[in-house]
Length: 412
Image (cartoon, rainbow, N blue to C red; front, side, top):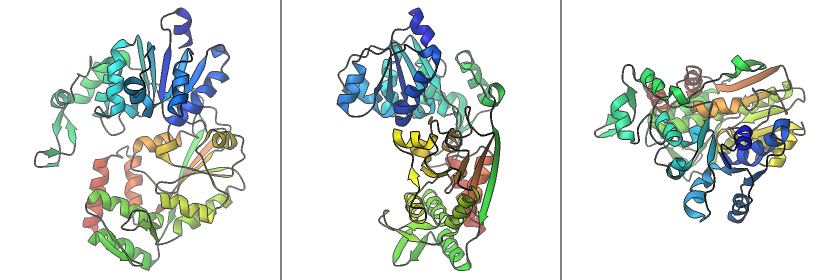
């Protein structure tokens, strides 16, 4: 990027990424490296007034949160005087009909350079690639229309009447797609090019008591549960998956979706054992449901969320012993490798992308320890085991979720 700017090949670069990555990671990295000294950068994050000031600053590089792309292109009224765009976490643009993708398609023809970065380009399957590469080349390689892309490379999978829930690649489709995009794609594995720390993955298995197990079994079989005066029901397999995952974690939301009912503390007890075993070393805990966070904070009042720039700084300075992170809000791009080397998954996610990206917050270049430990707290005999199997087989998709729930229901 610096070389292109110095040579005059491009004149101004817009970097688009997750909010915290745009606000913290990119500016920090630009300041860190000697060869980037002298490069001017403005951060277009915050209020519309703050974003406007950054865009109008004249800086060579402007970093922008991905949720502000539509604002910049369609709503701000500002001149779009960039001729290079770098998309950090290109997979954020895998939905071809989202507002952010449509805004990007609008300015793509004006660019001299388009660069997309991601460690998970097809976390939910080959269909993700259509929108991502359209953002880069305007549809030159995989076409401009999703319908044509589907017809050429896929056949309908399972569905309900005219509604198709998934598409199955045709024989040879994967190779054909990769061949179409090969001229602008480079794949680099960290292990092949960087000195990475040793990665140790472990599982801490917990078991519910018979009464707790009966609660789980009733929810699985009846898709309905009355618990402590709360009626809890699941209208479909996807909703049931969420309810079973919550019960496996120790609590489940009531009818209003806000209040929750406690079922057990097995995972909290396991987390306490793991934190004690860390002997005072910093531990990062990934949670999924809001009530997971609330219950963790009740058990560990000293725990602190990783949300702001100060939180990130204090974690990397080893000032936080127990930190909480949600994969959907902080799973991409944050540099947390200097603060600790232990990640505990309190609540699992079906999203392979979010799972891999969250693990990569610690298991990455620059990790100060020689070993990174990632531990998963799994409730035996529950959907947790199905999620772990899907993650391990790299099949953490909506289809795997539905199939796993169906298997749970049939299993009795």
